[in-house]
Image 1 (cartoon, rainbow, N blue to C red):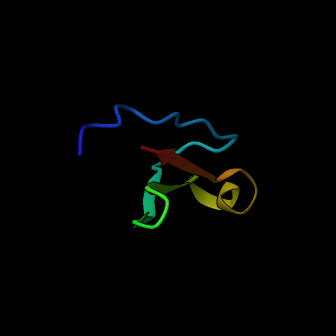
Image 2 (image 1 turned 90 degrees about the horizontal axis):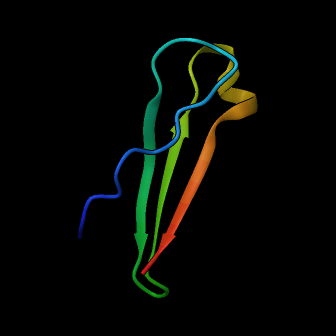
Length: 53
């Protein structure tokens, strides 16, 4: 595994972002990372990133 680098952290709300829901699917080589936006924006602009090898 190598570093993915910095993920984009953009939101209409200010505050601290959280990373969760990290998993790896060995069947197709997909790494999934969920970046949860701060505050009430978590419901509308959180993002899921998928990386394939």
